[in-house]
Length: 562
Ligand code: TEU
Ligand code: CA
Image (cartoon, rainbow, N blue to C red; front, side):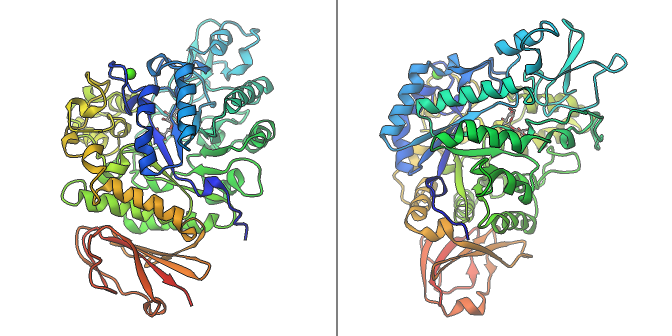
């Protein structure tokens, strides 16, 4: 069994969305100096690594995921000196920083694209993907992830360029060796600065098929699906192995690839211990379960049995072969306590239960800013409150009776919009939640007086302290990092129960996903083992050996095995 130890297998990562984290200079926008001012908070939580969502120069059509200069910093966030200061301050405190690498596309304001669109013989022409129109229309029927066609007409040369995301995010042509060299050069430059790794945005989409036929048109859609022609495309593994040879192998970095639409087998190719590509991937099966017949826009949570099936398949499928990443939230996902928990009566209990359920699994845990204090979804009432182009475009395209009526679309947005993750971090109970002292770029959640770091940091029963404990337990118990996972009770729609086994020890992890007391019978072979309560989200442990799990109760027993 290949269980070689690595620092990144034993680390806990904290994701920062800089725009929404902390504003240091009174403009309502989070920035790099704001992050520096909160490093001691992160140290206190106990995390090892920060993943910084993009801080590069950007016109901000997609909040920094549209980059116009990879080797400069966004004006809103500060300067390169501020970045260098953040990096050295973090390192001084023993915290690593991984950068978001967004190289499937650039901004249309990147100098490469400005050149590329000028003429068909421009030296930068082949940096992007250009096609002739078909009968006066787009080259094919593909739709973009953010609505509308995936092609945009460019009058200078009477041709169209491909953009799988917004039209201000033209896709780079990875088949052009010069593009790959530019990317490796830029990655080397950052690595030489001393950064500690990369999170690679939609890295599974960098290699497209040469032929680009029409895609299948799904229900409630006007456009065709590009997935079969761009996801895990023909040369993606070749390019990642090249990137590994040219850059990654020369430094001690951690890498995680964002790979929507991936199977366990395919993940073994990107992140297999024997592959020399990436260390791990983000898969999305568990957070895509609540898709409905119209895709993402839906308002119903998934069944627990389905969630357990997916998470368990990843736990056992990658065991010994590749490494999992563990996450509930990121900057594209709604808040987990509002999604799979209960953000009213059982807010605190269910936030802790979800944390425990995830953090006792095998893989590197990622905590998204605010998750550690149980931040909830925002109660949106009007489309004017949204800032995310995905939400705004979806409303324009689907509401008004086109696919949904306005009220139902608002319901879907209230369940799923990316903006739930992007409201300002709630630091304290003062105006604007202590994020800023002026009106922020996006509204603060009205519950900030109750939910904020200040009220939790010194309270031993808080969600913050519970996350802190889970992180500390991971550091103190090898079994949490390396133990083998096994699911019990696969069919239960109420309980998520699993074991971890390692080196003569066993953990029994028990989570009640409901607001009602549930009965659980511990299997015979575990009954007699001597057990010790490792962690629980209720202050008393209940009746010892109890078979009852109270509302949203979660606990872990540590047992000696045999
Ligand atoms: O997201 C990739 C992606 O697949 C998105 O379509 C994602 O599924 C969607 O946001 C969920 O609603 C990455 C980034 O994480 C996202 O923030 C960017 O907008 C996107 O790439 C383009 O760079
Ligand atoms: Ca600012």
